[in-house]
Image 1 (spheres, rainbow, N blue to C red):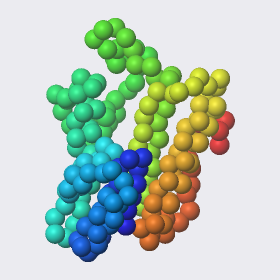
Image 2: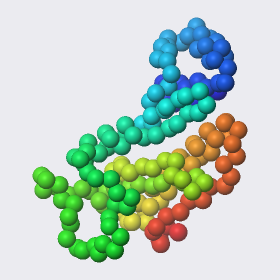
Image 3: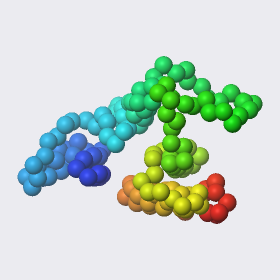
Image 4: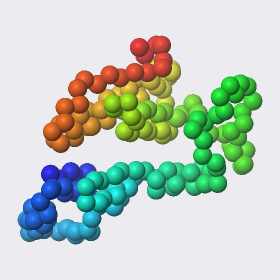
Length: 173
């Protein structure tokens, strides 16, 4: 099996000879380089041994923590202590006096069999005229990602079943 993302190709098989032959055949048609065993791709770290492949995002998370100056933070199971009361004051003002653009950030989770398999949080590319419109934009991106994962799983021979999109905006329900 070959998974292609833009200009990256991941080739998988239980037969090492088939992987080598596939690479040789592609090399005859395209200028390419074999960089060996898969270690990192699309923000994911791959750890392979004889019987399994483990995937984690340790490097991505470490980079993310460094980007936001949180590399020395202490890990906790929840972002806030249980029972914490929120106030109107903003404790998240950055050292330079700038506040994060909360109204411009969007995000979503893709959950499969009770576990998060993908998450995203980024600044919106366009300005929404309402919170409902912003939610529709997020739902559109989530639907695209769900379709992508369903197709990938189908190619791997796994039936993902139906997809349910959920949101937290009453106007978009």
